[in-house]
Amino acid sequence: MRTNEFKEYIQKESLNNVKMHEPATRSQSLQLIRNADVSIAFLNEEEVFTTVLPGKVLDYMTCQTPIIAGLKGVAADLIIENEAGYVYSSSDALPLIEKIVELRENRQLLNKLQKNCLRVIKQHFLWENNIKKIVDFIK
Image 1 (cartoon, rainbow, N blue to C red):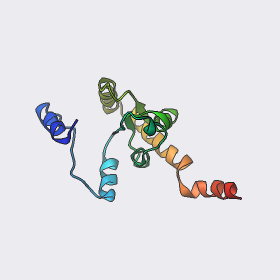
Image 2 (cartoon, one colour):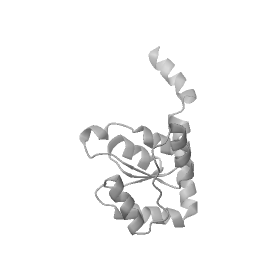
Image 3 (cartoon, one colour):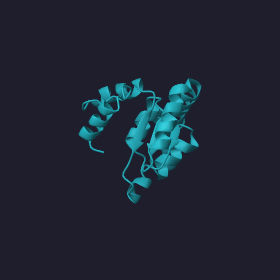
Image 4 (spheres, one colour):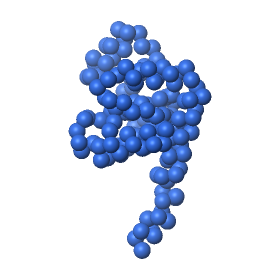
């Protein structure tokens, strides 16, 4: 969906909890992510995207923002295996919407997912924790 169409849809449907932001710096973007309850991530349904881990997924986890995603492959596996959010087919929006509503109403579940996001980052993606593995591998 194009940006203008999406903005019009938000207004027409009175979706007051959905916010559209102008382009922002990386620092501003991370602050916006931190202030959100959930994040939404989609990639084009092309085979090449099943083997990559998008930076935005790591950004969302770093900001402790659970992910509702239309992803496949590596990114989907990371989210599912670590209970850092939910993954659905990008062609069906209803399950995504239902999960967002559930998380809005179940703060305990939301908090669990937020903690899981941070755990994943600390265990697998911090330089300080991975440098020894890299050095050992190089030796």
